[in-house]
Figure (cartoon, rainbow, N blue to C red):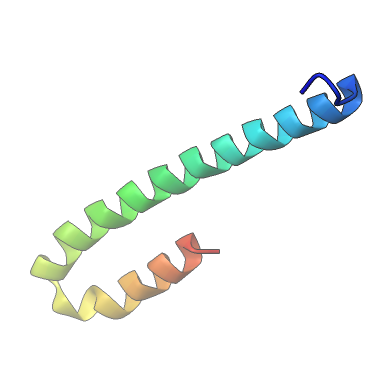
Length: 60
């Protein structure tokens, strides 16, 4: 990174930090989805349609 200007280095580091936060947020959302799936489906098989919608939303 010695040949990269300080401004470019800061931009790259901020992008990495942003991606890290995005991954952390997505991971938290996926854990929530897993919890919903493992409790809702056994108790209410009709909930599968709504759970699929949640999974699609997490993917966006």
